[in-house]
Amino acid sequence: MSLALLFVISTVGFFGFVPAIAEKGMNTVEPHAPYQISTSARALHDSLVIADLHADSTLWNRDLLKRSDYGHVDIPRMVAGNQAIQVFTTVTKTPAGLNYNHNSAEARDNITLLAVGQLWPIRTWNSLTERALYQASRLHKMEAKAPQQFKVIETQQDLRDLLTARANGSEIVGGLIGTEGSHALDGELSNIDRLYDAGFRMMSLHHFFDNKLGGSLHGASQAGLTDFGKAVVRKLDSMPVVLDLSHSSEAVVEQALVMVTHPVVISHTGTHGHCESPRNIADSLMQKIAAQGGVVGIGYWDAVCDISPQGIASAIAAAVELLGEDHVGLGSDFDGSVHTALDSSELAAITQTLMARGFSADVIRKVMGGNVVRVFGERLPTEN
Image (cartoon, rainbow, N blue to C red; front, side):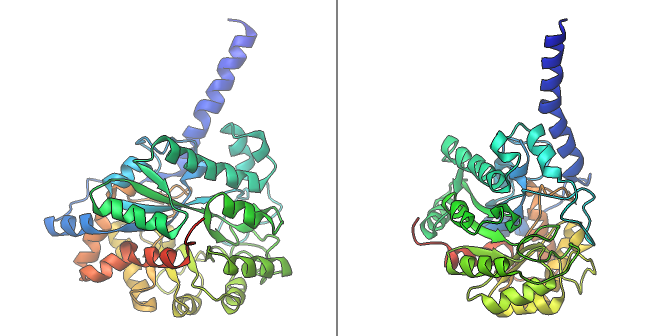
């Protein structure tokens, strides 16, 4: 075998298999026997409109139109779980040594290596905005390839069309596009318009490190908003975009809530009183978000302390008690380098456990998707 051929084979092996191997070790599901779903829970579950505020599936090179045996989300598994809507959030930077307590913005960026390893376009290697745009383009290409299976939701009419199609028996699912932190702006306010034009309809301010906008909940400073951060909040609040305060410092959350005139979300979290994790902001701030009409998405990973379906239901129950039934939704953090006890095909297990806790069908409808649909139905533009 020639050295040139050996090099080609080695390169294909690295870029073709190593990223998939990495994901298999990072987006895992706890081994379990099939969840037992009662006839009544199945009937209720099949009647729900289920919407999830947060999954990082576009970070990985899996074909989301095909069912995979690893990771958490793809279109066939959404169909199997009767999930109507997924917000796909674009991850553009994470620090080496990532943790909930303290991360440096100067730490080596993990996503650069992943972008190179997955053969993303060269323009994405040094630009966080281009990484976000590339991930969004994957969703648009999915829609173009399989319009009967998947629809990108950008407007109120898109949302109505999707819900009408599903009510008439279609298995089409919808995707909304969001950012995992506004470091995706590359420090330029004008990039908000670029992202919006590419279909982004939910944007968060921070991820695991401080950025030009201000402090992260997991950063070094715990600072509030910078002047640039305030300008971003004002601009997002003036646009038909949902502001996501996940991962922002408590000081940022306090300041943003004073500035905004529309409901905001925390897309993926637990409540601190239920699970005392540094991942979760103070319950008093959660209550302010609810008081302004917002929604808090409860996750399926260790931010709720118990990742079993029973544990997720317990976390949802605590959030409903704290915030009220109109302000709690789902925010799985699927495919976000997390370990869970289920994937998107198994969401009936959550319905089952909520029923077992005595939740009414009306409250379950709100929590499993109704509240999220309401917020986007109010904030999405009437037209592009």
